[in-house]
Length: 155
Image 1 (tube, rainbow, N blue to C red):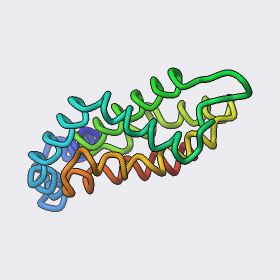
Image 2 (spheres, helix red, strand yellow):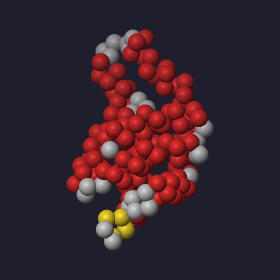
Image 3 (cartoon, rainbow, N blue to C red):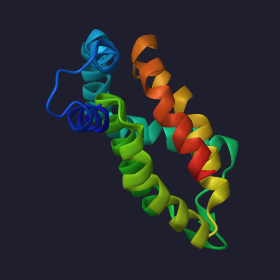
């Protein structure tokens, strides 16, 4: 939304915005309550979400956070938290461009550099199911575009 508002502001400089230009604002305002609610739930349940995702991921692949004998669970948890925070913020403001450009392209470079594609792929494939346990169906639907972007760029 912030990127869209900035674009509208630049394009409509010196004139009134058209109905077509305002459509994204009207659409955003229709579900802003659900966006705020979903964001607050993710914020308040962040540790539980991380715990649930860790259980689900290690059930699927017990050594998912290990490289050889070294356990990187805490580092992976920190990275999952940061990425989830950015995704929740992108959902709140309906701004996937900021998510992609602000974090995910950098995060993808890190994932590839440390050869962590498997853990990342598994994490963002399973995260929608984890969030379904913490959000309403409508809130989960609003989160899905950000989660799909995470999957696409971090897998």
